[in-house]
Amino acid sequence: MLEFENVPWPVLYPTCVDSALACLVRMHKPAPPSAAFFDRFMLLLERRRERIREELREYRIGALIRDLLRPFAIKLRTQEMARLLAAYYAPIRRQVSVYPDAEPTLASLKQAGYRVGLLSNTCFRVRDHREELAHFGLWPHLDAAAFTSTGIFRKPHPEPFRRIARGLGVPLRRCVFVGDRQIEDVQGSQQVGMTAVLIRRPGRSYQAGLTDSLEIDSLGDLRSWLE
Image 1 (spheres, one colour):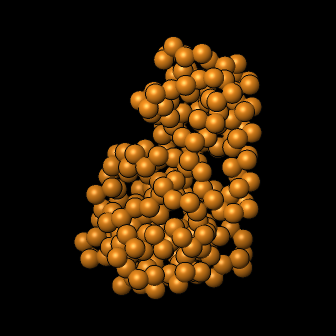
Image 2: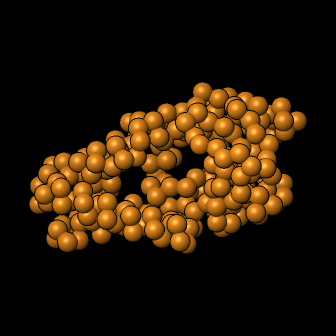
């Protein structure tokens, strides 16, 4: 529903770290050297990526930032940490966009009596995603939402799919899961008994024969298929 990769992540990371550094300066905290700060950030990020590859364990951006600050002897109170996380996330938020078919499709599904949920792989705070969804008019159409930063595992691990089904109060076999990733979304939802729908989005890479599911090019196609 929302596109988070209008700017590639390798471009966003240094911008986010610079934004966090500027926030430290505004809070009159000792600002570490920019290069050393960014190098440590990338080291910590790669460690967490390795854990994802090996165990599908999610990480939280707040924990990463606390680990980032530790060797620089920077201590923040709760409100200061919240400001720092908001500053880090600001460049990401500026480039997020909504697919034009998202809000009309959700509204149509709700009007037809379907329960609608959102499951997202993310390391970021729930409050950031709720604000984005509200900004784009999507939040009121959701009956449940699950973000992997509030759990342990990320898609395609079965746990997040079971969590969103419980939130919706719908048996797994009655759930239709729509996503644009073949492994995370299609294979992940199918392994717990959900019906998977692959939506092909521009800019994504798709491997022929990797998955077997219904495929659509627009969320608008979903309503007619469900009927």
